[in-house]
Image (cartoon, rainbow, N blue to C red; front, side):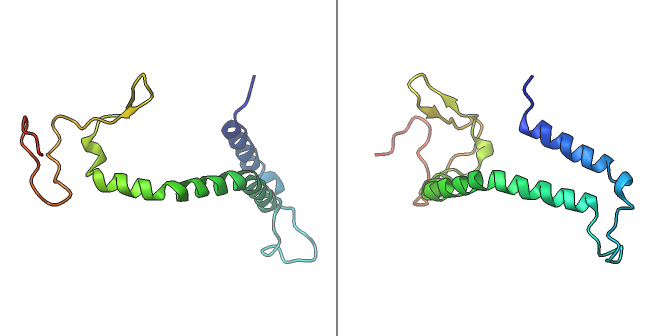
Length: 124
């Protein structure tokens, strides 16, 4: 049986939370109790550092990819008025992705501010 990363992380976090009462009295003798990082805090810090080390390269790669497509995303958002006016995307057999406007959606305003052609008309 294969355990997913999310399931494993949730199990580790739950175990750490359940162990908190058992380690509440663990304090270094040379520091005041309120300044001493407890076992729970140290464990959480180690867990988060490990998570950052593991996820860091993927997040940097994602950031780089998003920077590369940012101009295209801005152009797309300029063309689309409200995503709620569109149906879910569908992939055609040839690989094209089609995003249809809902039939009951209000008419789009033209980029130049002119009124869109009425149904059945062709704007030349």
